[in-house]
Length: 299
Picture 1: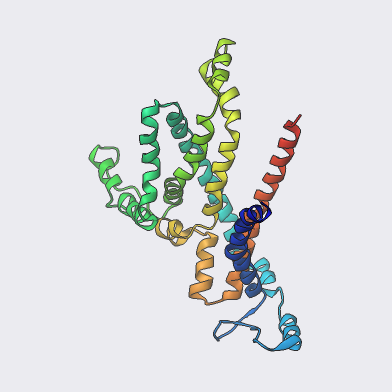
Picture 2: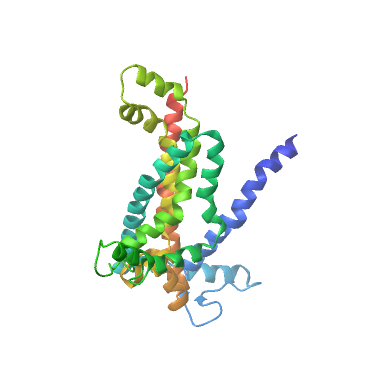
């Protein structure tokens, strides 16, 4: 029994250690190095068999100069702030679109729910890159959307939509909408409808019953959906590059340029480590608040 339990507990921890902790430690170690024209493109490198003397020499050459450089250069902190702002606003837009969709699916007849859920999940079956590329053909000056708007007489000339913040928000909302809808649907589908009926019997209108009963009881679905959208949106690279153009500053584009254009792996690793820290901190705080609330709810 003990070995089976240890195996069940140990496998997830082993997975996290191999695919999360180990790469993170490698990235952190590279972030303490200096860029070099070599293979690998950083120094120092610990040589096998160098012994304790080699290890001490290796450790003595590691430093936090790259993190000090990030703090002193406006480009990087502006990229972090811009990424947080874009990700936050895009998450709000995704919530405003996703909540009515999830609510409608949860209130739909049983025989329609699977079809509607399939329609939400279906985009995941196609390439992410192809789906974002498709928006270029839709939003460009000669694209489908401008042709339709001019065809029905709403505008007499093409509206510039591509390579704008609007296109970035639209792309993120479209790409991550299923990640918002699914946890919201899972929460709304389990709600006790008798509570809403009781609120209606006590004199609430449907709008007030939704505001006082449905919305508060779906808060954990809202939080889960927002985290699922916000976290990947911070480091997004494809959408701002294809739809936002050079005017959109996001940390994912900066990270790509440092790795593949500047070939500065130490600075790029420091950017990635700080980005992960920015993401992990609110998650840890949320988990702490959630644990405290659960502890207060227990009798």
